[in-house]
Amino acid sequence: MGPGDLDKALCDLPLIPNPNVIRGVASLDDAGVYKLTDELAIIQTIDFFTPVVDDPYTFGQIAAANALSDVYAMGGKPLTAMNVVCFPTKSLDISVLKDILRGGLDKMREAGVALVGGHSIDDTELKYGLSVTGTVHPNRLVTNAGAKAGDKLILTKPLGTGIISTAVKAKMADEETAAKVAKCMATLNDKASELMSEVGAHACTDVTGFGLLGHTVQLAQNSQVGINIYIASTPFFPEAGEFAKRGLCPAGLHRNREFYATAVRIASEVPSHMQDILFDPQTSGGLLICLAARKAELLLNKLRQVGVGDVAIIGEVVSEPRGVVTVISQKKA
Image 1 (cartoon, rainbow, N blue to C red):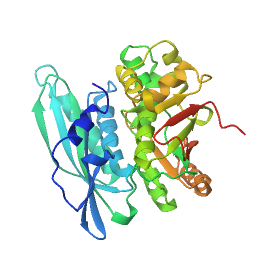
Image 2: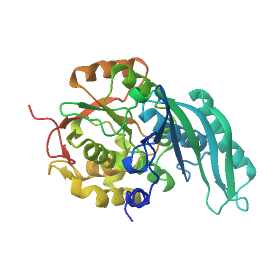
Image 3: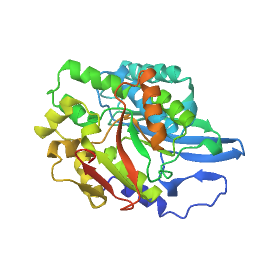
Image 4: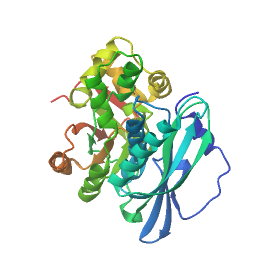
């Protein structure tokens, strides 16, 4: 099963038409959007997964930041959340769950989000995440279908978290590397979201499980444009490159490559380990923002001023070939 097969299965269901659903299952966007009034819409999303770090508190923070990111990607403000918990009561002490929930709650507090409930089940495998509700003005909604030829692409976090998480599980990553990546995953995308809305982004998605190339393909196909990605400009954790060279790649990376390969063209000069990083499934990755070229440097400077340090312009939107992402080392003069 490919990374997009479940989404496609949902699209095959006989959905109930509703004129107030601005973005739903069929749009394959980051979250669902329902218009309440001409000036107010709600954004709804849910995300949960198994631990990507060893520390329960840090895992709670990362899972919460990851779930909140879907609202930020659409230019919205998250307001409330509910915990989603699958916990193996027979194999783990309840103190582990308390630490996870404390981490999630602290991240919600940082985001100004109110925890209003949740649901838990006894499961053989630990999982945690959030169901989140946010708001946005319908006219200021940012989707993954608005990219325009001539736009620049800005990425707000470095790539490689999936590869490094695999190395952490294999006990091959040092504590400093693990801590650096965990901090990145636990960082909210709130500032980037606010600033992209302020500047006037045309489109956005957050980079998570489908990897940079998977999410960029969706952006290109939904917007009916082509997209060029330049490796030389794309931020990534240097350690991810080293681990990729040693074959420490998660299974999701290979599934992403198999599923999206037909919509991706990669130049021969792009090293294989860099190709791995582009397909690497991210946890709580950055925002991939499309906006007019004349505004790109402005947004870049604003992001750096508020502490988004690894942000970079990594590519541009072109007219053709539609729905295809082309990867080259760097833009030719």
